[in-house]
Image (cartoon, rainbow, N blue to C red; front, side, top):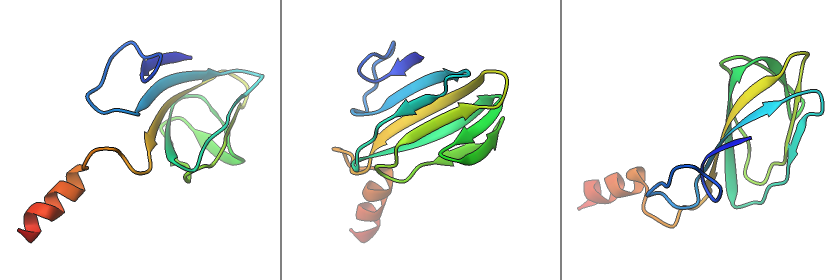
Length: 105
């Protein structure tokens, strides 16, 4: 696993509570617990396999439901996955919230 941003990340973001990592999944698969207050988005960089029993291949993009645990299994060769984890309710005002507020003023 390569951590790009987050607790063990190489870069620091102005946006708190965001985790970005690249996961290389081999024969043993990859599992991660979750909590109801985070959402995971996954982009398949290379390879094919299953994510939570859904078949995926290169260039697929999946958004997991809040709290949905993560189970990845590759088909044959290693599968590289770019994973983004963000809070369901960020501690900051999002662009959409800011825009809606400005439109109502």
